[in-house]
Image (cartoon, rainbow, N blue to C red; front, side, top):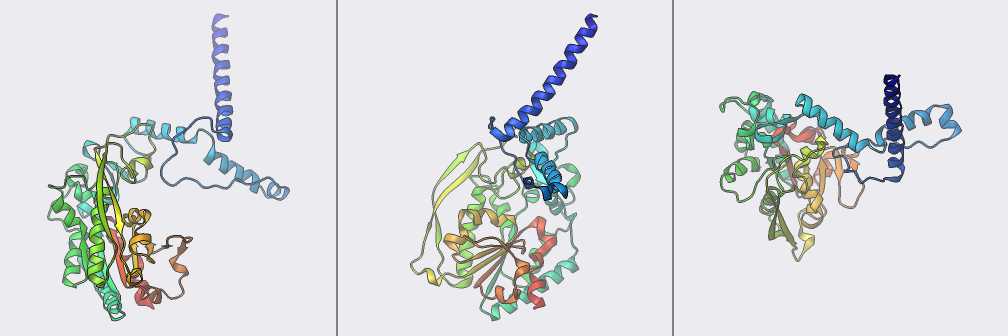
Length: 379
């Protein structure tokens, strides 16, 4: 009899716990009692379908509510982090797609490891064809009075080659897309800003980290150095005055800011991963007297330019400029995002600019140009 009573108490307690969690989740969803840390990365955007007879009869309401509740239930941030934490602790794997932990807790995305090891090598013939294509674009742009600059952003795999997992390491003699592109671009005399080589030379003597431990992009400090140098190169190519950056001070912080822990944020773990002290430049933009003489600038590139765009590069330095993200989204400060495939005449749009900067990291070299040369030369 005592055993039966204990079993009943256990069952009733379990039942009440489940009911409590369901009710609390519903209450949290509607009242937001707890201050839960929001999830990082891209989040679901399922619509909260309103009830109507039509939506009910077509099952749109039922299906929509099912999807919405699944994506927005009250304890979702905590349960997602708990699940990811348990999966990591038990199996040593991360739920974030493509994330790899290297030595001493350094985080990588796998495509950067493949780029550093040469395992994504396109082949010399393919790279020569791509460089010939960009050289043809440069020639056509120069005839129109437009300058072209290729900016090769560094990759974390190459920068922290000593922190890469052993299975990705190969001989230093192994050909990589980066080394071949640099060689061919110099041979073709296409203007090149090789940030990767510059960063590798700076690495032994830089006072502050150029790359973070738990992020994939260059550090905020590294980004400042690149932005300052990019402005100088743009002024040299266009022979026009451009606003400059004036460093005021540098703050240091053990807690990453901005994008310095973007990989970790996307992993959505319960715990914080250890980082090292990072540097955060505080600067002002020194304008020029005649802003009408500013070169109209277009940047076609990947997420390595996003940090500069977010702090106002296109608003305060390259005023009137545009950022074509992956040559897909058209970003103009103060305007809604549109898409490149909506352009009526791609080549004519490109030729409106005084300077075109193609910026991409070594992990994106297999996608060199993001279709820029093909679209330009097709017209």
